[in-house]
Image (tube, rainbow, N blue to C red; front, side, top):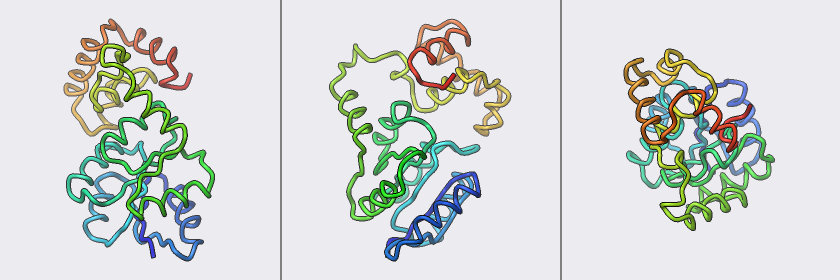
Length: 212
C-alpha cells in the first residue's frame, strides 16, 4: 500500500485528490495538510511514502516546504502539484529535489502513474518537464535570461510583482515583514537591471511567466 500525504490549501482540492488516489486499491491518502507548516508536521507524525505538494500555499511556499522536507527526510519522494505551467517552476522544483512536477490540468492516469513511480524511488518527468530540464542543462550560463538568475525567494517576489500584488499583500502571503519584502524587491531590480514594477510586469508577460 502506498501511503500519501496530500498538501493543498484548498479543502475541495484535497478531497478530490483523496478520492482519486484512494479509489485505487494500492494507494491510500493517510494525511492531509492545508499549509506548508502543517505538511511538515503531518510528515513527522505519520508514516508516508509519497508527498503530493501544492506549489502555492500561504506563508511557506511549496518550494520552501519541499526543501525542508528533503532536509529532514532526503529519501521521501515529493511530487509538486501546481496550477503554474511547467516553464515557470518545474526546473526549480526538480533542482530542489522534487520527484516530479505535475500541473493541475493533468489526467487522473498521469497523477496515479506519477505517485506509483515516485513510491518506487523513481522520478516522474512529463515530456514538457523533460524538455525544460534539457533546455536548462544545455543553456550556457551567459545565455540564461535574467529571471533565471534569481533565487527561489526572489523569483517568487518577482512573479507576484508581475501579477500586480502589493508589497503589503506579499508580506502577508509570505509571512514576512514589509521591510523584508522590500529588500527582496530591491534585489530583484538590481539583479535584473529592470527599473520599476511596470518593467517587471512587461518582462514577465512577454515571456509567459505570468498570465495576463
